[in-house]
Length: 151
Image (cartoon, rainbow, N blue to C red; front, side, top):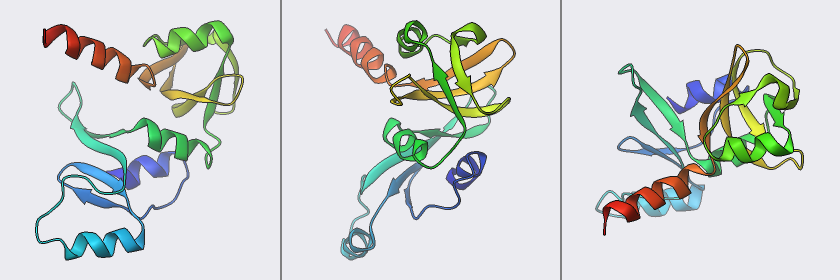
């Protein structure tokens, strides 16, 4: 799954470990330590993402924000949002064509950045703009919702 995702960004392959449905970036040394542990650890290295079911029931790779930061340094599939749209994208909204400062692709998945070159998240180019797939505000929204239900 992760290699298919990487190919969409012309990234090539990435050394990784899969534990259950989760993917992790590990160094050779850490991999050797992991293999010496009698129990299978739940987490090792940098979390890259995991396999999830889409609304249509298809298994997809859902990247982590840390992985998007890594990926953004090696891909040219980038859309840059203007200052106003940056905030809206971080709030889970999509980007309209008029709020895009620049883009170098016309379809597919893209890394969304702001004018300063900071990664805001992952989007998919669609007619009229860019659909928000994952943004850095997602963690804060999930945390807020979790606190509301745990009271």
